[in-house]
Length: 594
Image 1 (cartoon, rainbow, N blue to C red):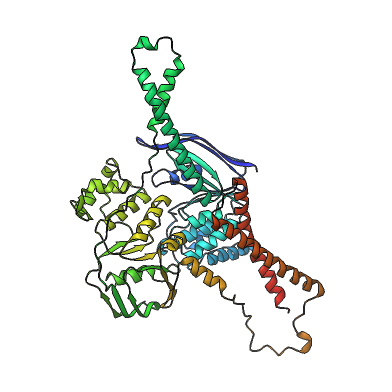
Image 2 (image 1 turned 90 degrees about the vertical axis):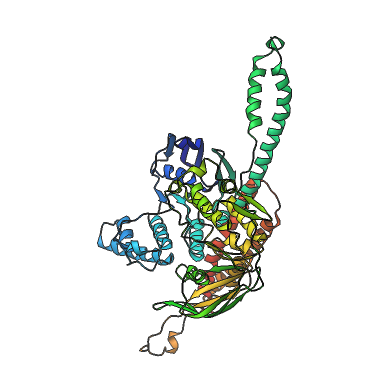
């Protein structure tokens, strides 16, 4: 593969804080690379530098000549007063009237595919999810050779994420992206780059392969440190002797001593968020909803909704953006009134609400001051109490970080602070509205473990399919117009259920003025050639589905194989879905002539 990007000795710091130093790696044509790291290590900064939006302290970024680069920012900004259609039209210039008409048709198609139906609404009135869809549409319409995407799934509903996932898998564009969506990484990327300890580590393969290689790397580093410490103890005795005892010894041994000392200090400790706070006791009665109705004008959110929540229940809420998911959980907490009906809450229920709107702290306060205002000490349960400074260290805020002003925190750091303030109150009913936005993958995994052992109840609104699969017992599927369906299973179960439903065939409208067809106007039957094609496609689809099932069984088994073979299987699995879709579409066309 031809090289399209070289990054050499890239360094960036803010004040005395070094994000990364002397980072070097290359990108080949057709690579689909996911960048992962903890919050605050400079993932978004590195993408901005590569996209030319920010300057590095030092280093070189060299694209191959003629490469068209498309950049999707994490928080896109648009000119005020314009509509999505106007913004897209300005971004895709044309030279004549015919090309203008074709461009407008294509813009409308892409906006529609992304579920952005408010093409004539001023951009400042769009929701965060709608603005993100518009930014994705502009990126797609530009048809770049090289895509740089910063958290492309944030603020998107699951159906839009699945569309984007399919688009990127089919696209021939080279891809470099930051995302915390683990299914997205697994299904789109063929290489993972990790920013860790201010350096870069590359792994060929998908996210699952990266996890295995990362564990091996950490284990090897720990073993190396242990060996260095054993040797260091012997060399320390030698270095402690009088200078004359060392006379005539090779200078390299003295130099090697100091190298050993550095290696021994480089102990690999995983700094992880500690979510070991306990929940307060919850009684047998949680909440009952009776005949709840809610609408905004003509838009119906809930229509005669009735449900009894059980102790220990873990519920996921899914639906397209704007269907009313956040309104639903605000109504449960009394933050939004119902038009009619009643909520009956148990006396022991103590809500912990993680809102997608984030924390409401004064942005000009320091982190430690903001938390201390909430509590002088934090009760961890079972008689254990700690000071706010100790508590914040459990959420990876060092003493120096605690002195930062809130407005200087990264998006991920603000999310961690928000999570800390929610859990410090020992809630027994957690309501999490899009908790996966801006949290790094490692923190998400720890949050999943915490929720799995959480004794209280939880309602989770999330577009992160991996997160939902690991947490929830069942789903509320909000379908719009007040319809809420209770599905018994996680999101993958629900997706499989949808896929098992018969595909609806489009019905061609028939004009009332259309005359009855004469005998000669019957639809044409299959030709001999088409009959052979139909039989061949039927066999091909069966074989492809069998191959897909075999690959799924291999991935689920956890069996190991060489990296090249695993990478080949991952790429083949990604391609099979597209091939099946194409074959099934032709099969349907031919079957109409049966």
